Image 1 (cartoon, rainbow, N blue to C red):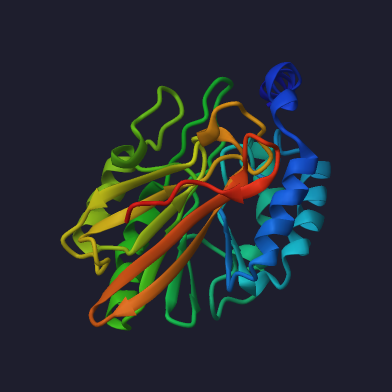
Image 2: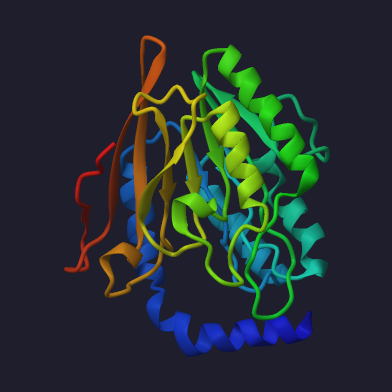
Length: 279
């Protein structure tokens, strides 16, 4: 555990510290809050090597987004960096991972939060791994519960939004040592039971992909999969610069339409709109 944290710290000092700008992060958050979103979804990696002081600072930062009922979180591999961080991770983010009707201290994944006509289903793919690994895993318990939540939400006529840190393979490939180990099982569930959107992080790139599903109620007949980059990145690659998605779900008869746009750091250093998304 000490070795992995030490290597992670060195990696941060050698590479990532130059690409992450806290000023850019503050401007992005201000831009996002200025649009007054109904709900904010955060798909993990809010700390680096999962030290107790990092969790403490992360909790204070999360509070700027408002009431935890209006913000949903799902952990990333950096949040679950080492085994001895898991208790602090669960305890720190309880307010943002508590499903509807769940008592404090009884939080578990997957969770379900219904907001108006939207069902938010949060999955945890963040698991402790050996040094040099950043892979994720859902596990049998979450994979068994996910179809039940998807079917129940569909029966209630809700748009089903799945939050996960590691993307499915069909949406973003399978990077060596960094992929979702049970992505195939996850994809089969989505294909059979449907969803109207999947939101993920992990790739450090702004992405829009699709998964096939005969049970989705998305108007396109496919499940859109949105991938968000780091919210503090100043990378020269436009896809890797700090950005977020503004997504609106609109019911049209028996299907749901998605209107999405990406905003974030432009080459000029200002916050603005990226190219339109084709849905």
